[in-house]
Image: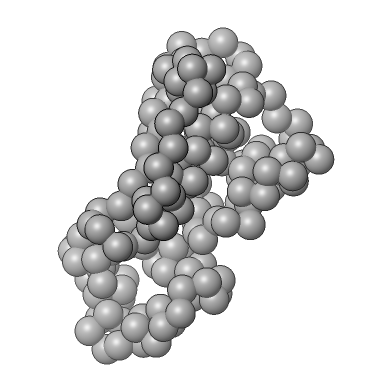
Length: 175
C-alpha cells in the first residue's frame, strides 16, 4: 500500500498557480458554506486556464476538480492526469512540503487521507486496499467526529472485508 511517495523529500519545481488553484477550490467550499461569494481576479482566471505540466516538459495536462457529491457533504480535490503529468510530484509537495513556502501554504494540515498508485506495485492498484487505506487514515486522523464509530458498525465492517470490498467497492466506498 502506498502510504508514502518515492518523491518525498526531493526538491519540487512546479508552477505556483497550481497551489493557488487548489487553495481557491478549498476556499470556494468555505465560501459556499458561509454564503460568501468571490470572483477570481483576471490573473487568477488566466492561471486557472493554463495546463499543469511538470518541469520536465511533458505535455499531458492535469485536471483539478473540487466539489462535493451532494450538498452539505464533505468536499475534496480530485487531481486527474495521464502518466508523467506531475500528479505524484504535486501531491507529494502538498503532503510533505520541501520548502518553507510550502509549509506556509499549510495545505498539508488540511489533508484527511491520500493514496499513491504505482503502476509497478499491484498492491497500490487494488481497489480494496485503496478503500481500506483511506478508511484507516480517516479513523486515525480524528478529524471526522463519529467516523470511527460508524466504521465499527458490523455492516460497514462486512463491506470492508478483503474479498467483499473487491467484489463491491462502490458499496464499501459509500459506507
